[in-house]
Length: 322
Ligand code: G3H
Ligand code: 13P
Ligand code: ZN
Image 1: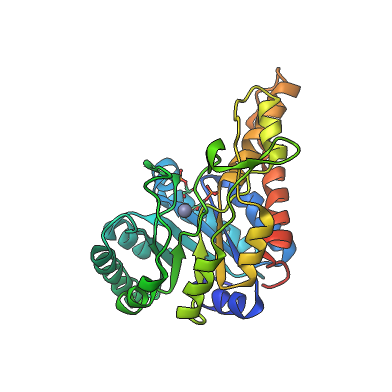
Image 2: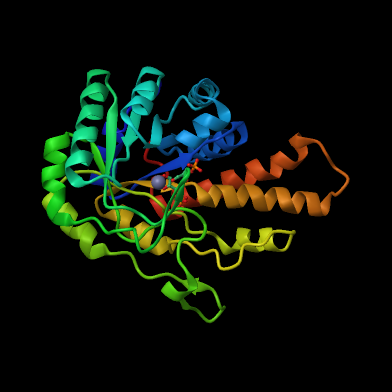
């Protein structure tokens, strides 16, 4: 089937009590690892591209890689989404250039300005059959060149969501309930330590999620910054020349719970980066004389597939839902 929008996916996810995984893509091996997992698990899928990914790999290459994946996976619905669109022009370029979904992220702007920019993107997108994700509240962490400190992040205010959605006409809403971008989501001071000495982050604000859902019944909610930072890959990186102390993510059981509620899209990028980096570091440590990219990218791609398979089955609950 051709690329789809997220409308049908989200309706089924909302009603079915699961979430669709949105995974960031930057090159061929990442696209292949993700889509092989989704094809095998018969799961709906969102492949998303950031401004940084477009700058790195070029819009056309990324669209063509995703189109190749669509040909290779004829039985699952795949949406191509712009992640964190910073302005109208970037959204327009992706709408004109084959994407089926865009995010306009004006969450750092004042409320009225966020509404105005989002509304403008929604009008253009809907005229072209494309859906729009918007954001209210701001997450801590690093995305592209924007680094939001924990002090400057802010939870979504539930009392704003009805006005925001009705005035913008957006199709889904990303909210801030304590997730955070990157592999270093929380400082040690924000966390406690478990018996193994691993940092345990503060729990997600399910009270905010529930209040948002009460105010927007049936409306799809999105969680960004939802990598869990698997310690297995942090260890693999640290044991093979890397240095990632105290990298910690969102516990998977909390994401699983969010997926059973109104959260229909969960964004995962850093976990795939960790899987890829750990695999490549280990490969070079084990084979210091090798230099063929096909050799070291093979276990990297396999581990991306493995982590995505785990997410589809155990975290998102969307395996078998295509
Ligand atoms: O939230 C941001 C995503 O992880 C994409 O990261 O902007 O470095 O491509 P990026
Ligand atoms: P992570 O950094 O937690 O993977 O979040 C990715 C994300 O939200 C992309 O928009
Ligand atoms: Zn994000």
